Length: 309
Image (cartoon, rainbow, N blue to C red; front, side, top):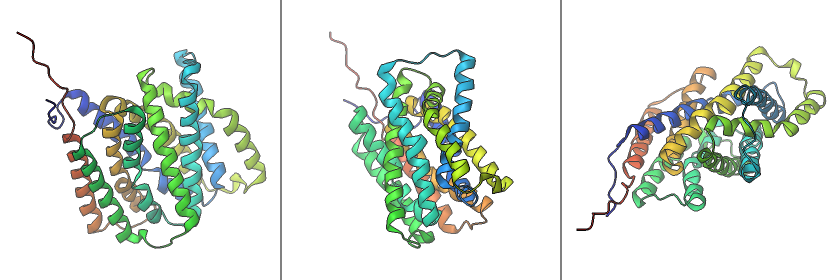
């Protein structure tokens, strides 16, 4: 009979959770840095330009390691990941942030870990317990409630909400497809191929928008810095740790670490955008951390079969 595993039962699980957290830490800068960047860049230019920078890093990494293309059977999941994480999430979130606040975006984005787990269970046939879903729902509810109490109910915009909903679906699907590829290749190769495959689209789009849209030369050094940091961190290096962590822990369980992302984002927003951190932030952090721990404790041990006499 299967039993629930004790929390952090193995060093592999601990390492996987740590790596997933490192990835989330890198991703948590995205919203405040995007908010800074859209002040000087066209939102689509900013999304494709950072993808070009990440793609350049991918070319260097793959060339240095002399990695060959993994094969045609991996092309579909790579293309889905490109569409989701290179174009879908960054462009849609940038468009949403042009129309509303990061607090309002956070209300809907809070559902991303739950959506990622759902897609992982449906597509990858991952096994989770009923207790896992309860823990995931509690963490999501805490994030949504917190966001609503901190201005998330304000500045409502139907189109912006639609952008965020689509971004959450795109990103969650991309996470699952990308993480599934780590069974065949290291996570750093997955994200490197993703951003490299995107280059035939991201380069011409970026060049056209450089001349057609608002001039990037008018952007401030701070706005350029935000663009470069996002390219290196949240679009490239962060995925090294994220994909590796998901492959070690399991996509459904590892994705729950991302519930910490909105709270980390608020910490960076307080630092970069002079937003306040209230008592409700601390209470939400405690609730979310508790929910993440609860979800990890709900894991099942492999069923043990007694030897026959």
